[in-house]
Structures are given as C-alpha cells and as structure tokens.
Length: 57
Image (tube, rainbow, N blue to C red; front, top):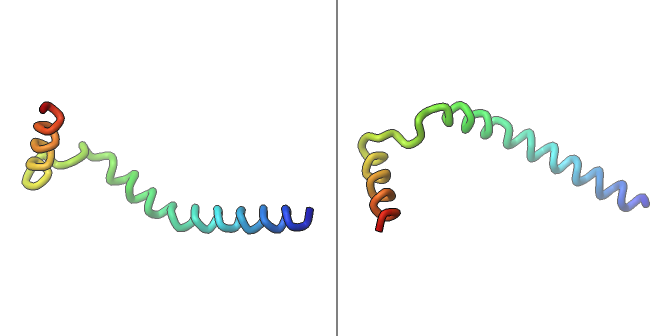
C-alpha cells in the first residue's frame, strides 16, 4: 500500500509540473488562435492554395 501511495504522489507531482510548464504555451496559443487562421497573404496564401488543390484532386 505504501508503494501505491508513493507512486501516486510522484505521478501527481509530475502532472502538476507538466501543467505548470504547459500553461504559458497554452495561453499564447489560445491568444493567437483568435485570428482567422493562416493569413491569406504571401506564403500563407501559397500554402492555402496548394492544400486546396491537393484536396480537390
């Protein structure tokens, strides 16, 4: 029983550490996601058109 408790404590600590490290990345991604996706200019436009053509053929 002691080993199970110890393993659960370590797993909880790892989960907490992962959440703390990923939270800023998630916040930045969320703030950038409010845009309209890939910008339809320059390389974004080329990528968009290429993907659309590939999906049609």
